[in-house]
Each structure stands twice: as structure tokens, then as C-alpha cells.
Length: 224
Image 1 (tube, one colour):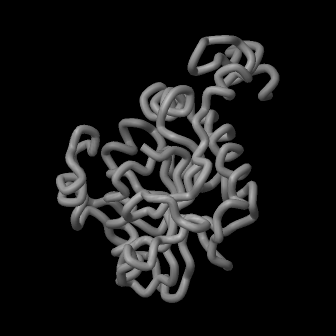
Image 2: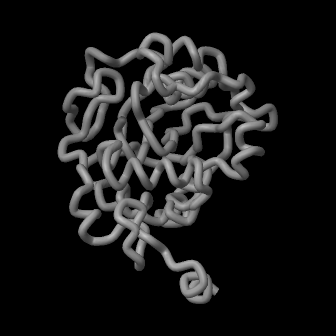
Image 3: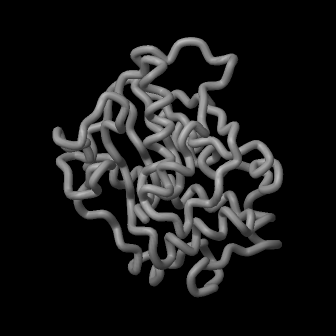
């Protein structure tokens, strides 16, 4: 089936338009990979992606996994997923992340949780890109996936907002789903496509930790 679809609708490089794959070899070489892990709070270099001791807090993120800078082919690919509905491109994102897991000291017995979209936004788009990515990572690495969170406030787009305004924009926007019972002690990795200021994932982490979660890490394809 995939072969037939590729013949009828051949994949084109999101950057240069060359037929064959969503990111051709030439454009792949232009991707700016994150060489050294960074702290999710201050975004300075951090050992194995863990939050710096001075940046730690009771309800803060414990670490950050990112693959590349939000520039060039990676940025183009992420935008096309969001606004052009090319959702099968997530296979590339999974590969970008999986090739770099060895750099990070992830907690044991973790579960993958996607950052939720507001219901109307998800209905308009037809999917949540974070959900697709988390499910694909779950299958690739045989790690449990749970859709634990709900975004019940329609926030403004974060693009163009200052760091403080981003925090205020998502404040109180997330909650655990009513059917969920018990996240106490569970180590969680929040999954999204882009990590910019970290305000969204930080707010999600706060909700999870107040519910008793253990470590809460952030994972994103790109660092904005």
C-alpha cells in the first residue's frame, strides 16, 4: 500500500523539492543538530540533559531531550506537519530523536505523554502532531504511551510572545483527564514537536507533579 501511495503521491524534500524523501541527503546535511544537551529551564549546556541543580524546583521539569535547532529543513518539516497535514513525516522526527538518545540520562520505567491540543484546534487540524510523535516513539522503543492530559483553555499562539507572556498565556490551561487515576510515582516524558521557552511543557509538568508524578522530562524534535 505504501509503495502504491509513493508512486501516486511521491515524497518531495520539504526544503528543496527533490523527489524521493521528505528530507533529501543534501538538505539533511544542513540540519543543525544539538551537540550538547541543555537544561530545560535556562537552556545552557547541561550534563545528559538534566536540569541544573540551581534551576531545579518542586514542580519543574527534570530534563530535556532535543534533536536539532528549529531552523532550515527541520523547521520547514515541522511547519508542514502542522499546516499542510503531512503527518507521516513523523517517521523522520522519530529517527532524529532516536539517534541521539544516548546523550541523555533518561529515567527508568518511563511513560510517554503528548502535550495536548485544545479540542477545537485538534478538530480543525484533524490530529495532534505531538500525539502522533509520541505514539510512534512508543512503538519504536516499546515504551508505554498514555494520553493523560487535557488542554481545556484555548490559549493564544505562543509565537511572538515574550518569555513571561508565554508563561502567563498557558497558566492554568492544562489538567489531567477525569478518567485518569494515579500518576503517583510515575516517570513521565512529555512529547511535543518544538521546545522554545519551555512554558507549555513547564505548565504540564506542574500539573503532573502536583498529582504526584516522579520525574517529568520534556522531549521535542527541535529547540526553538
